[in-house]
Length: 301
Ligand SMILES: Nc1ncnc2c1ncn2[C@@H]1O[C@H](COP(=O)(O)OP(=O)(O)OP(=O)(O)O)[C@@H](O)[C@H]1O
Image 1 (cartoon, rainbow, N blue to C red):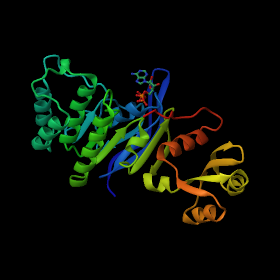
Image 2: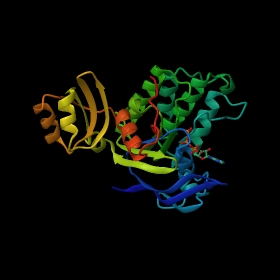
Image 3: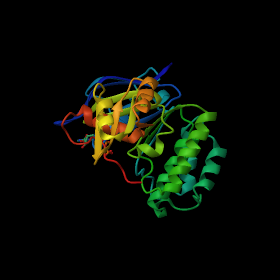
Image 4: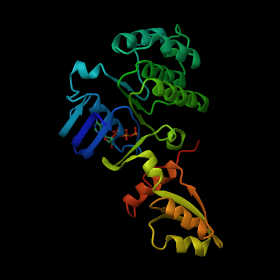
């Protein structure tokens, strides 16, 4: 695999506050990574470092083999879609799209047209008159049509309704299948995007808590349910991430080694199901933070 971006021992301090603390990670070419973490975890800061908006206090950031800071050759290959993106006051939707078409060498005008239609964005409408969700949709159209080799979406769904969010996920996946590129999606809506993700990068209080292949991560845990005694017995020699009991019945999220454990659960009279990614991430983060509060909140859908 080819590394598109590398962070090595990156620390970012703002006055007294450490937003990122010795972070190391690699973004592989042609992957979709979910960048996850609670409010203030350091996600936006990490994306700002990748896009050269900030220079780390210490450590090394490399994108396409070079420091992204003030390097036009690198920056023209990156599209950064920010939460609540602002545009010049006089801009209409068409102006934002035209400006983006000049910026990104791989720009696909036909795709941009189709996406504007899909998201019902009139080209002539002043951006200042758009609803919050429509404003987010403009960023999404630009992010997808840019076909930038490194495309970063920082919570791009502000104000977008569920139908529009699904449209975004569907169009991203379809276009990615035809034109693979490296995508990072910073989000709190883990379950919604879990099918899209190939990598999971979880940041908590400026530190990397998880940096894993999404399928491998899913295979590390099972949700088992059944008679309480059998659930307890099953968890005896395994790492139990959480347990809920109601009367004689219990349900537990348990770390497992593979299919052999699933067979053992079934043989013990338990139901065994994959653990939803959001639940798994919450539980793993909680376990990492020992006795602390949950690291991620479940976001109501
Ligand atoms: N310019 C700045 N000056 C001081 N502190 C900052 C600055 N930018 C970010 N921080 C702090 O760094 C921490 C990480 O912020 P960051 O925006 O990266 O979090 P985030 O994970 O993107 O959060 P959210 O999910 O709420 O958007 C926060 O505590 C934030 O207050």
